[in-house]
Length: 600
Image (cartoon, rainbow, N blue to C red):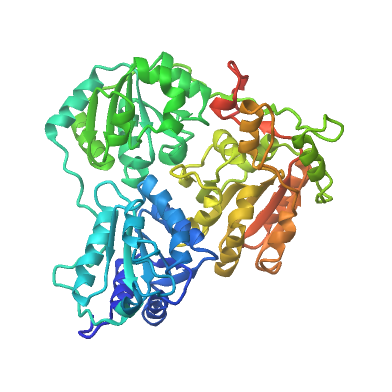
């Protein structure tokens, strides 16, 4: 690296040499020095990806970090750009995802003096340092040359070490031109991952001996298994011991779904048979890489209340505050299971296999019809009547149900690549019903639960994936209205992502809650139908973007065959749904809700 080096050039060169490959963002006055440096120095090794909003950029960086086990990098200018970026960074913070955000600031000479988009905290300006401290592991301001190298090292290390999470560097516009010189001799030439959390041998032996006393333990595999790269070790241990495994909603692919030891998924959208096995047959629960948050924990109440619990987590604070574990091992899941495998070599053990276990899913149930014309003239009924007169795409009213669409789509999941589920009824229903093929990643952002994450995240997941991989997104029309213009980013990049839009003219999960808990008074959750196919069609030519609509089972089969036969490119499939179903979400289901055993 040359002796005379500006901060912008040093930052771009370091990110390039660290192999992060992509910087997601939207340019602006106080971040353009970084984009110029990437243009000059990135070559084929570092690319600036222009999102349509900073929210999308942060979601892309988050998904890239989750799926590819790397440091996600995003950037924004000051003011509104900075505030938008925080939406995605908050998700990364809640879900422990390593992301580095570079946030431009006004020149130092303008701080506190009425500078446009100033966030110095002086007067009536936002205090950027305090703002970011609320949703990151680390935040620092770099305004002097000597601060750059140590702050960059600290930011990356904080994001990647221990319990991962986002870091933010605030860089004033004039600081980009400071000469920072070459990096110190001990500066990391690769991403500064932790060498591995040390595991106390005594803790491991205590854990191993507790497992030996169990007959039917169940391993709950959370997102920490994938974040630690522990899937191989966990699977090997489960196979050698015949330990049953369940996965969580945020990490359904953490264990092969088709494996005979996989009992299914647990959580609010989990499988009733998995919940029943934990409550009625398991004599030990080994929770690995999961904080056992409410979305996971609620249906496991009977099991957690009566069954011994052991926790393995890099940071067990969240789980320990919610439940009462018998043993806690605070360590990286990969380090723990590699040592457990070594202990197993010395003192083998084998558990009782799950006897005759059959995975059960909830049977789809039609939701009650919403009030319509002719009903009593309440505010809700009048609002619905007005909505019902709004233009509806002519191809609707075909009778296609959400459950039918998901069943068909489950046969078209990528064999190599990624599946992302967005917030809402369609996301939880698809997560419940789909078996994720081995080697395919599964992402469901539950940290902040923001609608539209999956649309943006699919871009971060697909970028950098090997040739021959593809991505499928399950999202609702509400999510599409929020972040659907990021499809244009997929078009620009030529990414083979199929965005499937479940179009029902409402925020379905909110409507379901209003039906159940607010006497059916539907407010601020419905809107006039829009034509997602035509909206998407304006984002690219037919050669660059495939668009289609389906409103019947037959049409859906035909459209998917057409997309599969065509050239590799982005696609948007608009599904017109006219009848709502109650999603397989435990709080919404009646006691004793009917189940079925899916055909294998």
